[in-house]
Length: 259
Image 1: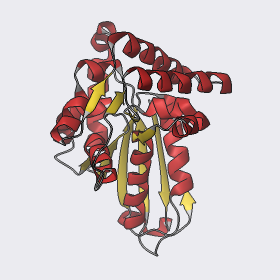
Image 2: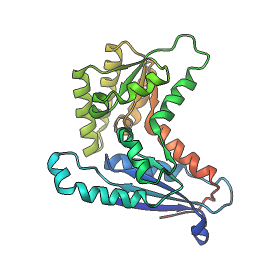
Image 3: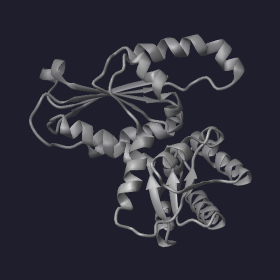
Image 4: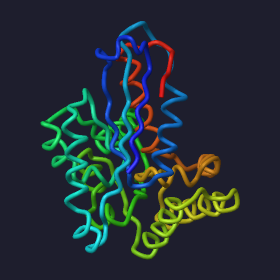
C-alpha cells in the first residue's frame, strides 16, 4: 500500500481545496507513471483555492490465499479511502471498473469518473462524419477479456469492435505481467509494438484500443510505431490523465505545487 498526496495552490487555503482521490494499485509502475504525468501537466489556470490529489495505491488480493489472508484488511483500507468523500474519484485501472458500482456505493455515491465510458465517447467523437470507420481491436487484461468488459461498452455505443483470440490474449497477458514488474528495455518496447502491429493485422483492424494502462506504459516511445504503420490508437491511459488534469484545472488552481 502506498499513499501519496500532493497539492496545487496556496496551502493557506487548504481547507477549501477541491479534493481528488485516485485509487491505484493494479500496477505500481502505472501508478508512478500516472503521478509523473499529472504533476507535469497540472499547470496554472486561475487563482483559487487549489486542488489536493490523493493517490492511494492499494493492490487487491488476487489469489484465494491472499483473499483469505488479507481480504478483510483490503476492504477496511478501501472503505477508509472511499469514506473520505472526495469531490471526485478516479479508478486508475480499466479492469477495476468492473467493480465501479460497488466503489460508488462505498463512497456514498460520490462523483466517480467512469474511464471506459469516456473512452467510448472519445472513439465515437473521432468518427463523427466518417462514413467508413474501421473495427476497433480491444487490447486489455485477460480478466476484462473473459468478462467481455470493453466489448459490451463499445457495443452499447454502437462501435464495431473485435476481441483477441485466446492465444493472442495469453501472449498479451504475459507482456502485461512483465510490465507490472519492471520497465521494458528499448528492445522489448520495440518487440511489444511489433506484437501489437501483428495482432492488428491478424484481426484485420487498423484501430486499437489500449484498454489497460500497462499497455501504453510498456509501449513507451514505440507507440509511435503504430501510427507510422497506419494504426489509429485510442490510449485509455492518456485519456485518463487528461481527464484528471482537466478536472484539476477547471477547479481553479495556481501554479505552486506541494508534496
